[in-house]
Length: 136
Image (cartoon, rainbow, N blue to C red; front, side, top):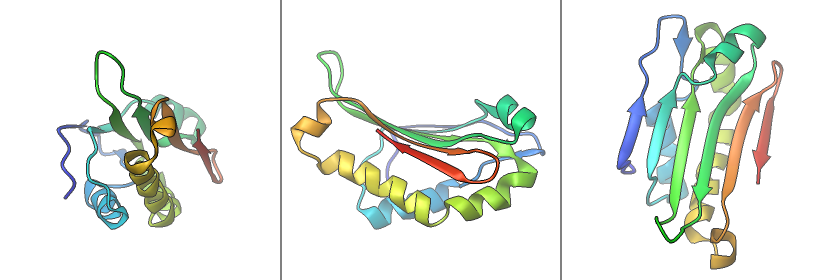
């Protein structure tokens, strides 16, 4: 298991679920050779959008470049979804997109200083019919 110095998992009501669990995410991190993640949050943030539009953010990874006040950080957020969509969304994410996200984290760990001198993000959204992936 990849160590998470900081990890939070919001409790969910029965009609909500996470599209990927910690075990599946950890397996992808280990397969990619990821050595460290600074925080992993499983959040209800954005659930209203999901309930009203059946779309929203599923996964977001932020690489925060080091500054004078703090070191570099890799932060992962997995967003809750309506429970009836979990199987569809999990099938869209696992294993390919979760593996791609883990590879992105590994790239953040091993990239040259030029890449690591700026903030970057990898975000996965569901538009109601398909995944949209943003890598910046």
